[in-house]
Image (cartoon, rainbow, N blue to C red; front, side, top):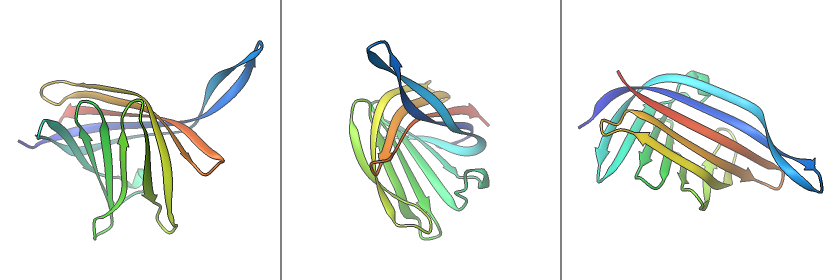
Length: 158
């Protein structure tokens, strides 16, 4: 059964720096970017998985993009469909301890191959589907770009 929900989506992006600490180094996170949006979406269950579906807002810079989040108990799969043709512009699986490589289609640019390593996943949705999902992952492309991301989706009754 599908139900309408309110979503609070927070995405924080960090640069990881190594700082000297005695004879070793200590990893420090420095926040680079943060985004928080409130939007409406749909929640439903199918084949022992929960799905959260919503349309991106102008604030994200991805208007005309539909996002589908699948939670299966061990991973989170995020798919984005851009434009009227519903082209699959991103398909990313986040599973703790697993390195995934995905292709991401950037508007007006060529597609990028991204390496994604998931550090931690917390699925705190109750039986009704309300609560919070949080995922901490590292994303890397090219030799020079690597960021740590923390994504949190709070699902609330509408």
